[in-house]
Length: 261
Figure (cartoon, rainbow, N blue to C red):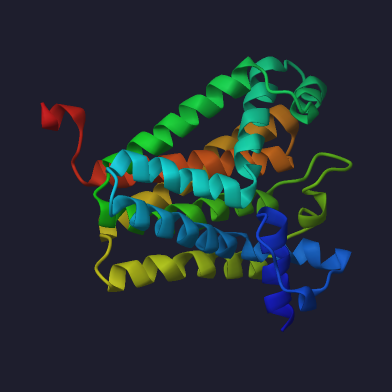
């Protein structure tokens, strides 16, 4: 029952979806709820897949991709997109650690953030729209949990650098056992997709490598610039990993521009 509570606490923190009243709340639960961050991704993927499937029945794939992505943004309150934009502003406009943190805390979106989010959405939407419908739906169930596992790895391995912040309660400490739970909830949908023949081993392998690359690249960048991570950094890793997964799965299908020429 406590594990179910922790899942609902994570769902409440990372989305705007309602949770049952019986769950209750204690501040100490937050620091253990991050283990279910990838499982929250499964819920978001289910919403995205349902919208994509329904839209694709009567509309072209690009429109279905836009509506699906809009549904995830609504469900999460643009939580991760906002973090990505703030991170672009901070790393793009700050020359010192203090200045980067100051810019990232500013609620206004600057040029780097605006350009970054436009490019990010374009990369996600165009990649998702180019996938065949079945592959697109399967990839949603790879990308959302895996990208959140990539973000969770920062909580597991790096230091939270702000004295206060919305993400601090989740960032106190994450044990290896808790990260193993997060990894298991991520690999389960991938295993189901493989067993059902809805995706390929190459797509799953590529998705895992894409998520790992995003976590390692951005994690190293955050350590150099900040000495650790903030809540915005978690959103940035999630967004970059999600986009890379879409592009990697698309690449495994051999849809390169030169091959189509």
